[in-house]
Length: 148
Ligand SMILES: [Zn+2]
Image (cartoon, rainbow, N blue to C red; front, side):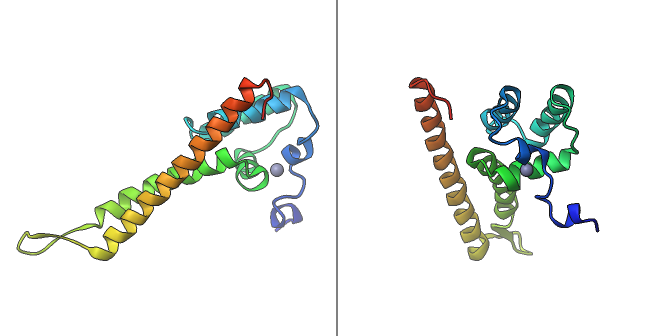
């Protein structure tokens, strides 16, 4: 394993650009934050990869770009939306385990699976609440003429 792989943070071009006040770089980064709630990160990364390569001559693999957003930048809206999508998948699995059908065809609830499902729903609701709050903050900043 090369050093670069052992330390994923090492030599990340996007981290190196952060704070550089480069207008185009800032635009690409805001594009991801602004669309995190309606577009899957995989799709956003595809657009970012093309824009970086075409306009800033930064050539990165999609995996490394994704890694930057998830584990380097840790922008709350990007991470929360990413977690939210994972949670929705988990909800579907948890829900499918709640109802147990006996050999006689009788339906009953599995208490443990049901409590896992209800906890997962609560988690999803709290992520939505957090994102709503963040969205409101963002709107207020735009209203006062500042941009986050
Ligand atoms: Zn990075």
